[in-house]
Image (tube, rainbow, N blue to C red; front, side):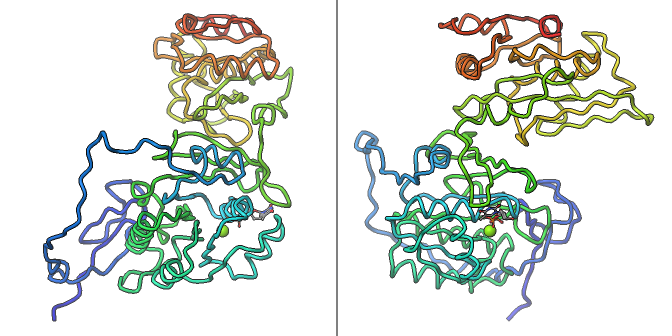
Length: 451
Ligand code: TYD
Ligand code: MG
């Protein structure tokens, strides 16, 4: 018997190396490599090539197009991000920081599915803790609980009780006996997920995996699971903030970037049906450095407030900070404002924030961010009745955005009087009623209109 071999595996992305490295060459995270034992090479080569019978080939024309039945969770926001309910036999990863509310939303889902047989596997909390949480939220007497971390036991239980939905809280606590790695390591997390996936696909049971995202290298980042599972729901929000956003970052059965908005209350998560109103509720009227924009999250338009604060820099190097907005994009917008509008921001600190704890990737918010910066710099408030949409190009031009009509209708719904849009978007608008539409071609046009 020869010596056991080991390899070093990045706990964030699954890359491996024969020796320890301080920074992962793949995902660039620091100190994420830990040692994992690999099975003896000759063991893995023993798998014989088998002749498998009963393989069924299907013609494309014979594939049924009937919509698979979906289970409605009765939580509208959750059903939407799932693409219209839970797909049978699908495997969904619910990822997020510890304490964001992953166990809470899963418990609420169990209540919404009260007439279904659900198995809740808790590897983290005791049965009593689960009960305390559940009682806080509501009633779910029929829920089947299993406090277990051994994958084989969990699968055996599932085979014997045949639940319709299984919830694993959390995937990082599971353990497959036949693997040498510690639970929570990339190998364990990946192999346990693969086994659960096989089970889900063969039995038609839908499986939800809760996965913690931490910067700590000891816990496997759910990143490695993203390509294995059908759907990845990212639960975002500051623990101190009351709003939580559930975002579909991957979905084989629905559109991605779809979001569900919740408010964390004393008795669980409450759905927010009109997020625009909530995000604009605390807007400060009449002060400089604020503008409103219409972003699109999945299929849903949401109005948001872009805030900027431009102050005299007290150090040699001016600070730039972006919260909820891409930092590089902020730098680009500042450069455009300096070059095209002659704004001199070289000795100013610039802070940009998307209010409400939302993170936006939509470039349509550029023009509003630029307006907020100029507004704060000149200390003049922008027109509070205007919504600004448009992507800022390097030449200072305002470029077209997608789905302009949805953004316009959301602005009308929230009672805004004017919407400022890129001129190139004008031709795609059929209904021009209900709001005054102003078109712009450059960032300086935008500034002239709102300041
Ligand atoms: P939890 O679902 O346990 O988070 P996770 O599973 O993502 O780690 O809940 C996290 C926080 O939410 C916890 O600090 C307490 C708070 N909370 C409420 O404010 N109201 C509630 O009804 C519940 C159940 C939790
Ligand atoms: Mg939890």
